[in-house]
Image 1 (cartoon, rainbow, N blue to C red):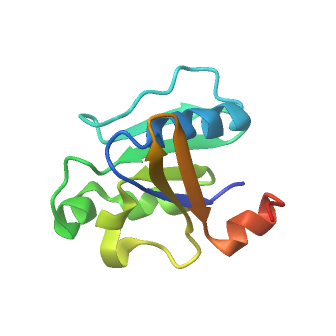
Image 2 (spheres, one colour):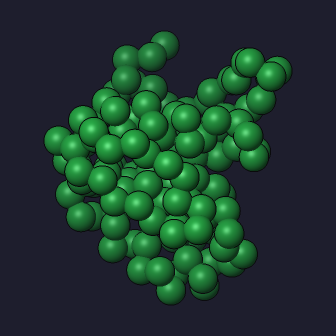
Amino acid sequence: MPNDVVALIGPLGAGKTTLIQGIAEGIGVKDYVTSPTFIIINEYQGRIPFFHIDLYRLDNVSQIEDLGIEEYFDRGGACVIEWAEKLGGLKPKACHQIEIEIVSENERKLRMSPELAARLKIT
């Protein structure tokens, strides 16, 4: 939905980028979505704009503030953020959160905010 912000939390190799690729496909993004680790923010067009943000290489909130990241939260698109735990106080109140836990090499456990689970009709 427009102006949705999804915060992804999980260790390296948990599958955050893979999950983001699925979200982008669901929004109608036709481009191949890759991790923007060196660019930090990639923008794609689907039915609504899709903003993929990767905070892995940033060390503190002031570096994130310098990006103007908060401007992406209300640009009418979906904003998905990897390593969102680094947002600190910049994380919007209406942000949905998904935590990914590695269970085994081929298995992950997802925990999501109750509001997101309700919207997706997951019980």
